[in-house]
Length: 272
Length: 163
Image 1 (cartoon, rainbow over the protein chains, first blue to last red):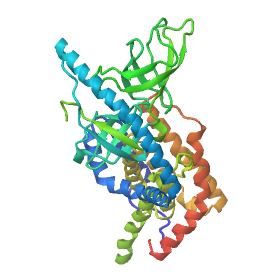
Image 2: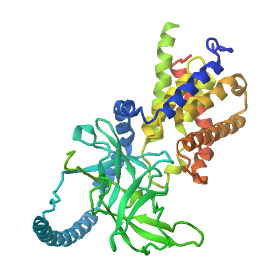
Image 3: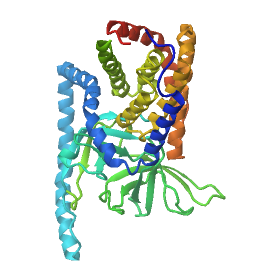
């Protein structure tokens, strides 16, 4: 029968132990990163099992898509490819020209780096963090701090690596900041995440700073984490409130952070 | 008796594993905020019915496992789960004899406690976090599933003779 009274340790004693354990984990979170990635490797089969149903649904819906849809998609992609290859030809020409000019200036040429496509397995549900789980990990050479892009712009950086998975912190996370430069006039700024997936904040900009709604922000390459020149966000709001020390500047990320699926991992030359 | 002891704990942990999978399963964007706290439901059930098999420390470990899976700050859910398990473990003799509708209300308040504790612990780590009503949607959904979970786990418990 079910015992009516508990024997053994008292609940208060157990609660104290559990609370001390949890608080210890919370306080030493930074120091516990190796333990965390080891545990993440241990539970990554669970992640794959959990992702299985949605993967099956995706595969089935792809198999069931009609011939008409496929033809339509094929035609659209061919057109897109034509446009992109034209731009690529122009780009190659410009790149050569750029290398020549740089060699004239004795400036180091910027080299092509290694890259890899990863797929988003799950969007983490912790509502206070903007993290996604990707299907590449230490086995593929992914490292902490690696920049991550999608086809539109900068998405974020890798913050946790296990053997077969990695977690990417999105640029909209509260703890994330990316050094940027206004494409129009090279003004430097730092774009902080706001906790909303469609908004970045640019704090500490002087009242008279020359920034307008619609300005494009590119990575500046300062800080050494993100390579230079990738689009990050577009300015959506500039308020100069009298009496405040700084202008209130907000921007919208170029990458569609709500619906990312395929991501591009970049390797810096030194680390790759 | 020895046979029963052997089969009890694995069954409990298998049901919790299933709940964990439901908890971290990718869902369409519109449904994500309505996802019920599956793990909380099962944890409350096992502490209520088997406080000698599943107690506060097991709840804490379960919370830490969930922290790793959802990518939260390590220990936040461990803390919240141990507090909820403590409340249930203190009052399990009374709660067992509550009417179902009262149990539903208790589960709703436990879910609220869980979400507030998680928010509070995250707030300690980063004071800039903010919440809105969307964050509390699971508090509305979770208790509605309690009668069904109670019935289903009762069947599982009798089928596998977990004691």
